[in-house]
Image (cartoon, rainbow, N blue to C red):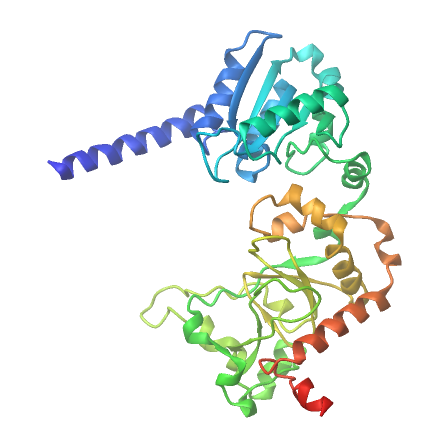
Length: 396
């Protein structure tokens, strides 16, 4: 009986999922998003719908179609961005909410409506109902950005890739999206190898023979000719800017023959994905896919195979230095809060960073100094393969 009930529940869930896909393709990611779409459609022409929902629809890529639909057919007349702890009865940081009013816009008025500014009040910093209520009164009284009072139009959001509802951006920041080229058009951004079994194919560098490890090959051909078995592997790693996280080596003997055939022993398909092999062993700018805070971008010299989570950008040496300088700037840290609002810094998100033509004027000697300082710091640890002597011993 219990098994039948479980099966019935499973079938009901599948039916509900299919219903969402069929009826609400733009908002199928979550039930609350479907309610936004449904309530907007129920409002009469020039009517309005007021709601309070989770804030995730404002930023995440999974709601991009919903945002595009709303900005095309409605306008956000006003919003109280409440963030976490908007209700004393709901503790913790998990539930972040926003209250907003959507106005239906007739087709003949959509052009002018997109340019009309709505009112947005940012209340994300308060930690209780009372604090947020007090912040709201202050914002309505003084009406300044410092107090959380912002004016933004739907056209402002549509100028940014994915149209996130980032009402607090300055005019200069918005302008950078309009005038800059996407990073993906400036550098060659690539994901790398997925071994399908890191325990089998990876080692930390001190676990294997140094005579069978090649640290400085500049191409796949050179690596194959070296006769070595182990090669440096860029696996991403912890938060660290400019240089470092050189810890792992990869079994890429005979141009990765064992990895390439992994899974085919019994006639199956390869389990590994040796993708974008043309960029292996090339110098790069790289970053980790996941971070609990800001992203950190590092320069990698020639000699590394890059992982599918050690996202990498390739290009001329000077340009790579200038890109690293740009990506580690405070400006890009703010841009990434817009483009990648979660812990994931996927290559697609980073590729949307706007790059000004002036990037070629950034001083390469500055990034060289920063990389060298970070390299010296990394090599002071015995876990670095370039470690020579403990600095405390040197001072004796």
